[in-house]
Image 1 (cartoon, helix red, strand yellow):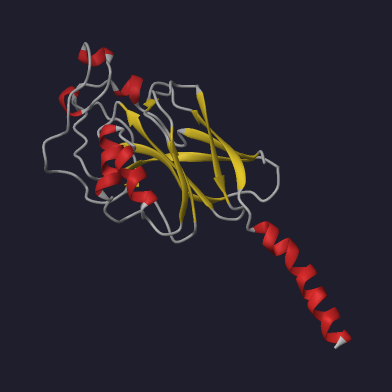
Image 2 (cartoon, helix red, strand yellow):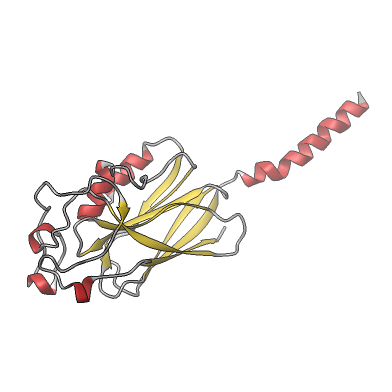
Length: 221
C-alpha cells in the first residue's frame, strides 16, 4: 500500500508541468506594414488549434474570407471563427494601417497552439496579408516572421476605382467604389502577384514585392 501511495504521488508530481502547459497565456502581436504605398484595413487575429485554418492555398476562399479580402470587413470571418471548434479567441483592430506603421493586438492562447492573422491591402481588389497558422511561443523570447500577400481569387483584378472600396485614393480623385463585376476571378487562394497598372491605379506607386508585413509575437503573461 505504501509503495502504491508513493507511486501515485510521483505520477501526480510529474503531471504538474504538463497541466501548467495547458494554461492560457497572454500574447502581444505586433503587425508592421512593410509596403511602400499600400494600407492595411483592420487586422483580424485569432488563436486556435491545428485543425482550424483561415484558408487553404489552392482552394476556394470561404465567403467570410472573401469579404475580408474584398471589403476589409473582419466581422463575418470573426463570427465564423468564433463558431468553429478549436478556435480559442478572435480579436480585430480598427482603422487603417499606413505604410511603415505598426499595430498591436493582445490576445490569449495556449502555448504551442496556433495564431493566425489577416487584413486586406488597399487599393487592391481582393489581396490580403496573412499568417495562416504559426505556433505560439512557450517562452518569453519574441518570435518574428514575415507575412506575404495572398489573392483570395474571389474577384477579378481589374484595378478599377469603381471596384475597390476605400476612403480616398489619388488616382480616383476621392473614395473608391464597390465590388468588381463577376467573372474572371481565379476561384482559389494563391500568392498575389501585385499590381500591374491594368486599370486606374499606378503600378509604379502601388505595386509591392513579398513579404508585405512583419509580425512579432511576444508572450507577456
